[in-house]
Length: 486
Image (cartoon, rainbow, N blue to C red; front, side, top):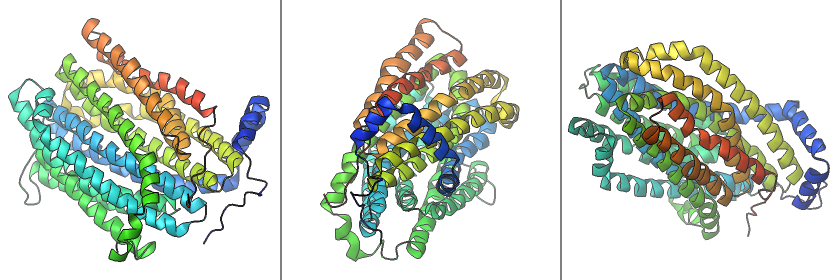
């Protein structure tokens, strides 16, 4: 059991003193942050947390890569349908991510503040809330499946293909909600490796099931895009079972016991989780609807742009997976420091994590440019017209990765670690709906610009988001401790 934070500890500095130091001796804070990023203890702690989380996120995102890659040989329409349907499923996933990431803040602060049992109870609460919210989201998709199919294309055959993929693919959110809730709990208490192994099992099973169900191998029927959807759903069921066994064996044997249910329904924990998680979920879903709007705008530009977006999205999601690893690590490290009321250490750690993010994003950009020919070769079945445009779009993606990386760490990692949920919503929605979507609409409908420029317009939200995120960071309103007994 950890000790409760000692408010007389010299490390416990009032947030007002951090603001004063930033205003009067900013260089000292920045230098301390850079030094912290290179200190052996910090690097060890960072890598121990970041590598398993990033690996898990990469393996989860790889499912989409394999779905698009393995269906690309079926034709451009099939690629477009999988890309379109994946973005709808992405909205469901973000709904779950919002609740779970909000819960992760609570768990990390409970754990960092010394309330280990309350942290365990909060993991159970997270599982219940995550599953409940996934049921609501899945029901909404089924009710709206008709209009969603109509928006995919004017071709009835493509609309039916969309339904064939979307309905079974949406079901993956139920097992995903359980697997991710457990994973968030484990990483928040310093045990991220368990969920990583479960994700590896899920990824391997997804590839094997794709091979069987898309093309009719291993005695299975050839279901095409519908097979890709079934493969994703079944592989998440397998992952949820594996991570469930791992959490019971290696962390909390009583996690699923009936006697714990009342503890999981603790009003204080639910209130704290929903107070942080619901705004994140709401903001994430509205932001994801904006991402879906990009698909609709791309469809207005033609089948080729929509297919290009489907090809780029999986590679983009792999980069985002790395960013999720960095932001989740930020949540844990900064959140635990805040839970101990070590506000200056939290600030220095946040700066150190931004240094790591900058380095990682530059490396990812260079890696993407170097691997671009190989990536395009993998998608050779999509057609020369699609690949020619995709080549230029990948270059644009490499250019904007630095902005996106810093934004994710600042907004998802630092601001939310202290329970600051309102400003990220304002930042995300303002940048997307008031900047990017209007600019993209003008580029497509009014000026009929080439799709690489349209894709750059989609990413104009990152530049706007960065200005607002840096401003909010410097206000230091995220320096807040969530007390486990209040």
